[in-house]
Image (cartoon, rainbow, N blue to C red):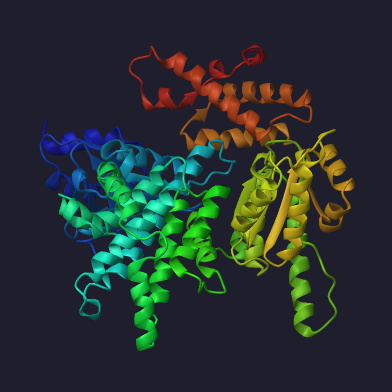
Length: 637
């Protein structure tokens, strides 16, 4: 078979190829580029910017191809050289989605290459899945996946936060190394740099002994710093350079970095006797030098050392009370008796860590409102948000012209059954507040009773404060908030959480919006029985059950994202099933969550039905028939 015929045959099996423009020119280019035994496995059309392909604006139009051997980009017009990237050389890949596009960023020895594709979610997802299979999970960071329904799998969200946190630690490690390296030839003292590193190693010992168990993040952060500063202990010098070659942590090097941990840990343990428990010699030297020369070396290095200790202790995003006490001791060790009055360093680190985990996408009010109005159902909620936006606009205009204005509350109560979009609306409402200038960030932090209430006296207030600090300048969303109320006889720390929260709402009234959510009856009772809550929550949003047709629309979103199509008989069967459950609904009816469960059952039934069919064509794989729709009996366990 001629090579071009073979290429066209391969492309015919790729669903994404059907949506590609200028196929004729691309086939000619592929005929020159693809090798005899090479197989094209997927393509994605978009605009590309890379090492060999420079273009203004979004980039050059063309296709990014995944083959069984390599990755390459080919321009649609036929001009220009292709850009070829070997899988082994890919340092990392990040896939970031918006509602209108997906951006795939590849980091490799030649630089950074970016493909921006406007193809719909299922097309982009199939390509990303094929790319993941080639380069491995550890090198692909699949960020910001957007869906018209609530993410059911919180694990993916946690993974994104973990990767963001590792990138933050990578950036902080770079800062520590740069700060230390400034003293290579300080004051003609050849041994000073070594003393500075010894002090840092001792601080590592003090920081690590505060933790009962060492999380992987702490080990990675310490390893990043010491691999560079203790290079004589590292055989692979190229690895050290590679770790800091790019702005983000090369995730595929994690295992190699952790191999050095045991070596560094032995060095750290030895340091406990090498450095005075009461002073850090290098810092003391800098303090004396500053006094004589009227310089500020001590302040800069002390700040770097303290930030380093914070990162070691808080590397996994948490800090126990005991660790907090040890951090205070470390601060006194670093600064001595002359501590700065304003403890800005800790607050700065906390804010940075929170900021890394947030979405920093700039959106206009019109864009946010368009997304809200595009959600399925929720007519009354959408009208309430629109009215609130108009109120704020008029309020600001009156204030600008010097007319009296009536104060209003930004805090809100969301009440309604589960699975009706309360969390989604809370997230969008935070962005509305940001666009209106009421909040600086507009991000959302979600929590519940378990995230606020502890089991011992005094600990609940600490937990509430930690969550509030994370939510500052954004929205704190408390699900099933009524569970904070009294639980009968005996000591319940839910009231302590409420009292602390009310105090923080007053302390940060211009920086914090609190949204409480739950079942209508329970929420009304919760608010009515507490005067403090009733005075602060005056805005109520009611989320009603979705109608059967709306639930079917939600199902269509799930199926479209997974490239499934419903036959007409299957649609009728499914609507009848949904309607039957909807008519017998109670307050716990799951709405969107119920539909997700139905979708998962249908996918399982379809898989069982087609498993013995040959050949498995695309139509067979993607079609849902009436035989795949579960019956009421299937829901009985």
